[in-house]
Amino acid sequence: MKEELFVSGRNIPNIDPYLHLWHWEIPLYLFLGGLAAGILFFAGYFYIMHKEKEMKATIQWAPMLVPFLLVIGLGALFLDLKHQLYFWRLYTTIRIESPMSWGAWVLMAVTPLSIVWAATYIKDLFPKWKWPFKWLDTFEAFAKKYRKAMAWIMMMLSVILGVYTGILLSAFNARPLWNTSILGPLFLVSGFSTGLAAIIWMSKSKYERKVLTRIDLIFIFVELFFIIHMMMGLQAGSQAAIEASQLFLGGEFTVTFWVFVVLLGLAFPATLEIFELRGYHVPGWLPSFLILMGGLVFRFVILEAGQLTRYLY
Amino acid sequence: MRYAMAVDTKKCVGCGDCVVACQTENNVPHGYCRDWIVENVAGTYPKLEIELRSERCNHCENAPCVRCCPTGASHIVDGGIVLVTHDECIGCGACIESCPYDARYPHPEGYVDKCTFCVHRVKDGENPACVDVCPTSCLHFGDLDDPNSDVSKVLKNRKWKVLAPEAGTNPQLYFLT
Image (cartoon, rainbow over all chains, first blue to last red; front, side, top):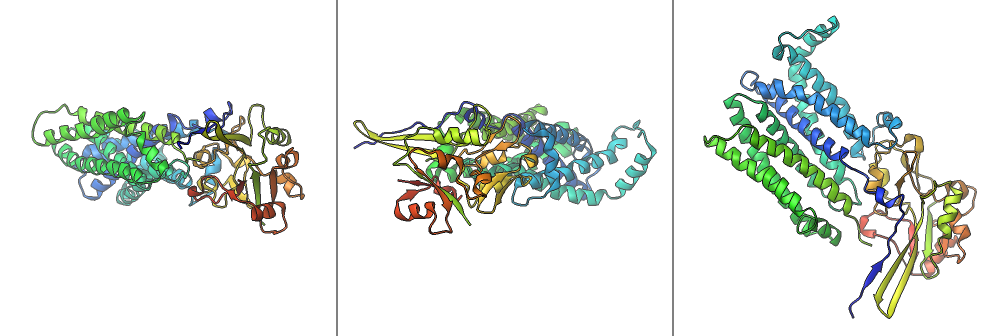
């Protein structure tokens, strides 16, 4: 006998529509956080490798953007809170079990660090720049002496920041799409790749573009591998996980994900970058723009889709 | 001490008295509720079977909402009751995203709200409001560590299930089947 099952479920007009709680603020923040992490990581790395002269965009220009990216991201996070006056409660406690808690603390460390890093280069980039107070000159001179230490800390914190944007979601038991451990590495790789794309966009040096494009290609291929890996993992999982993956394999996010994220956001720009490395003329901004767009769409899609997935009972 | 509740799905008629009692007892804002009724119909006509469940927070032993909370506003008190301290809650929604039972909701004042097992009544030895008003006496409440409590006895003598055991939350809301 074929069994039919009807579930009335629950329909509380003031609650159920609002349990789809997170909107544009969170994916925008995840995108900006990953982008900032990518820029800071490579700024730190190439500074330590003594490439200050050859890689000006990486070490000096792109990090100028980071404080703005992080402040906009933090602003979006703040807008998302429903009990905003109490946001300071985040900083009266550290909860190791909660990724959101240590993420908040990492941001508290990364944001000032990125401001100091940018400040030590501001006179190199804008020779007419003058600090309004004298103590800022003293502070700048002091900070310049510790650039190497800052570079190391920046590299470490940016990895944590990049992973955290993914782990934030994978900690949520109730959303089978998110509740997979690959999400941390995937968001890290994607964030670093968008960071590289932004630096490449800003760079005018042929050598710098070549070095960064090569690294970016590696990140894009790893990201593609992780995406396939995630889909395979979900397909091999429980019914809840299978249904989550089907949102991308025939379900409502199929076109958005495979066309705008995988094809236009990863595969096509990677092809363009390969052509560029082979010496063909490719508009400099195009691959970078596509990668950044792909990264943003990716986070929107994962966030929207994840909130539709749930346990079946 | 381990508080738990058992819902007799064979006796529940879905009247919604538990929902109204909770709203009145806990001053739940108009149009919101901390407990609700789910109706499942299974089978092929004319052989249909109906299951009515009065659902609420499962007061999980391994509570994902408590784990995800960045400020510690969500916490577990004596007896395993999961509570939210309103003036520590920032309304980030992490607990709402992490609850497999959709038991939490954003209160219009900003913080996150949910069933408290009527902790203010329970600590005086009374039952939660929903249990006391149920006209078919299908809700059983008590301490699982006490073999003579209402809930211990009924769980010993009847078949039961919990919702989404695969979520690993070890829920403390049992459904007698």
